[in-house]
Every structure is written in C-alpha cells, then in structure tokens.
Length: 328
Image 1 (cartoon, rainbow, N blue to C red):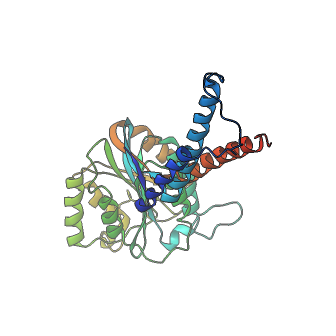
Image 2 (image 1 turned 45 degrees about the horizontal axis):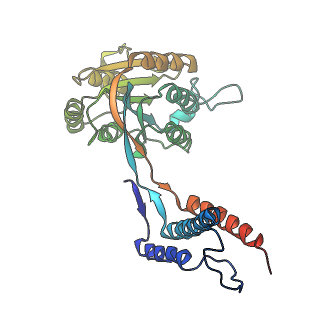
C-alpha cells in the first residue's frame, strides 16, 4: 500500500462512522402499533435506509481522512527506453553575455548565453527518455538541477541560468560538480557531461589527476561545445610563435589537449555562430541514443482535497434527501 496520513491520531475520528448505525437521521412519528402480520415487509425501504446509512458513514470517513492528511507516498516506476544520463554544464563567465562577434548584443544579435539556452531547451525537448541535470560555473560551481526525467523542470532550470554573469572561469570545479551528479546512480546507458563554454582556464596538476580518475570511475563521456568569439584563438589552432605554446597564452588549446588525454570518450565542437551551435547539438542528439534502464520518481500526491470533495458531495446528497422528507 502506498497510502499514508500526516496526522495518524486524527484517524480516531473514524469511530464517528458508527453514529449512522445508531440513528438513521429521520424524524420519528407516533403511530399505533401494528403487528408484522398486518403490514407486509418493505424490502425497498430497508434497502434505501441501508444506503443512506452507508452514505453518511462514507461522508464521515471522507472528512476524517481529509483532516488526517491522506496522501500517496513517493513511488518509483521502472522505465526502459533509449537515451542517456546527461549533465549540462554551462559557462557563466561574463564573456558569455557577449555576442559571437565579441560585443554587447544589439537588436539583431543574441548573446552566446541566450543562444545556448534557446538551443539547449530545444535539445531537452527532443530527449524524452533522458535523465538530465544542470550545473553552471564561473568563479565557483553552482548546482542548479539534479538528474531528473522531468523535462519541464529541466527547461525551467535552463531558463533560470539567465542571471548576471561573473568575471572568472574555473572549469575544473565545474567539471568536478558535474561528475558528482553520477554518484549513487545506477550504471545504465550512456553517461555524458555536455560542457558549453566560450573560454578556458588553466587546470592545476592536482585537479587534472582527480578529473582523470573521476572520469574513469564514473564511466563518463565528455562533449565540449566551444563557443568561439570572432577573431579569437580556437581549440584546434596551433601557436604561430613558439613562445606562445603554453597554457597561459593558449588555454583553450591546452584544455582540449587535456580532455583528449582523459582516457574517456571525448568529442569537441567549435561553434562560431548560433547555426553552428545548433548543428553540434543535433550531432550529439544523433550519437547518444542507447538503450537505458532507470526508475522514474513519482512525487507524493496529496489526497485530502479529494476526500473533502467526496464528503461534500455525499453531505449535499443527504441534505437533499432530508429536505424531501414528508412532514406530518
């Protein structure tokens, strides 16, 4: 049974359901006594009287259960489908509020963050069987939404990332939080971190070792959609001057090289426009569609309002019957 009550002591009120058995609620009229031989049995009247008593008992039961806070407890439903466990990791550095041209968006342009939110919302709509979580990062990581099959909640979480951005990028902390989403999760189907960023930062040696270990332990694939600003270095560009061949001068290139050496599946996309970003999302949507097994969480459902409604209907019915009583 998945039914429970908030206040169990209120169930003592169920003793009141015995009252209709002691009194039928009808007015008694004095009449001379006649033996059953002279008055034949009336089964219809007996049946109606029993039904009225049952209605009264049901009305009292509904009121008591409503007061007790009747509800269905949280349940789990086994689901089998095609999809993946996906964590959307969004860069919230201040540069994401600029357009792909590297300037503040005007009426004909949209910022990189706005384009990412719009296309990620469309991406979520297409992934009906996925478990999707949302995180973001700038100076520090920010937990937004755990892995869930509730697509409306995920879309609301993506929309909620439209907040003022900060000036720094700490991608290693963001990746660490994204990987933590898979802890205590059954290993079923694909596990993906989808990183959407327009820049990179230097990752220290200790963080690199931890990320390599966590990616292998959690069996997670990484997709990086790099939102490249016009005339800025890309993740595949090689330095023209050997003096610039270092992580400080070309952090995007070195971050790409680090991801390539993780030992886990990795795919990078370089998007210089909303159309290129849309194409990258479509490619990921096509690639990650494997059989998966998971349990859908069904939230607690309050039934007290339904109890009050049924009790009110029964009481109105009994009140109508009372008004139909003949007065002598």
